Length: 165
Ligand code: MG
Image (cartoon, rainbow, N blue to C red):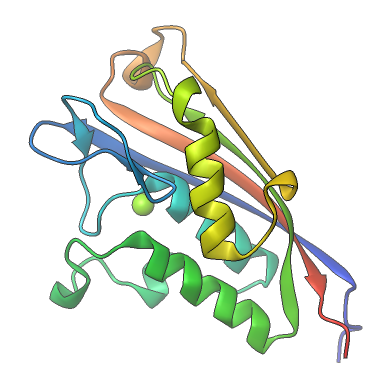
């Protein structure tokens, strides 16, 4: 039996393709843009990376295990449901989110004006105050697939802290 850790750290990464006729949703916020993210769910890659970071911190399988992309009932799924699943798995094992730090890599649109709104949205979903949520957006300096606006990538790290008995 391993010792119960007071703090666990997790890391997540995701990328979705940018295409026409899809919504662009990041962290549960719809962002006006002429392209959106392609995926089986709502394709919210920021929320996916965060859910994977939480599951990773718990040493559990990734979100594809819980929400297979060939399951019709997950079509256009609100990714906050995926995030809530990761949180409830954490709770079951006696952990809650400590803080999170996220990075979005998108050539366009400019996301600076949406940072606060996305933080508010995530704060509400994961029930963690905004001062424990880091969120940055950067471009890829026109380099590679992301630089050509073929997709948006996201990174997430989180800590989970042991819930006091
Ligand atoms: Mg994904």
